[in-house]
Length: 72
Image (tube, rainbow, N blue to C red; front, side, top):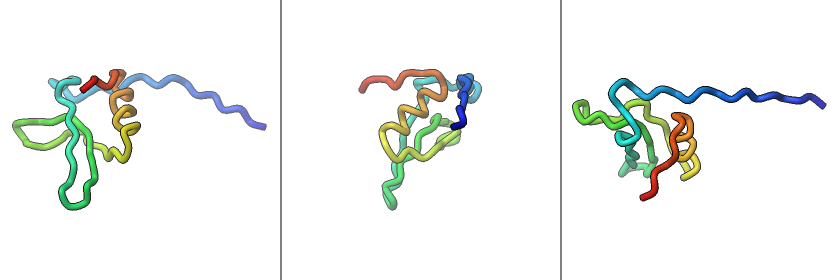
């Protein structure tokens, strides 16, 4: 039986000038699909946006940057 070794990955780097306070989720009014990313107010859109189907996906997004999901 093969053994798989997983090395710890380095956290991702957020876009320049963005931090944990710039993370926002948006939901489509048509499909209900939720995306999470860094909100750029100048452009009015999310940067580095990914689809979040479950709350665990949101936790994974924060963890990929080495952050803990903030409490509401």
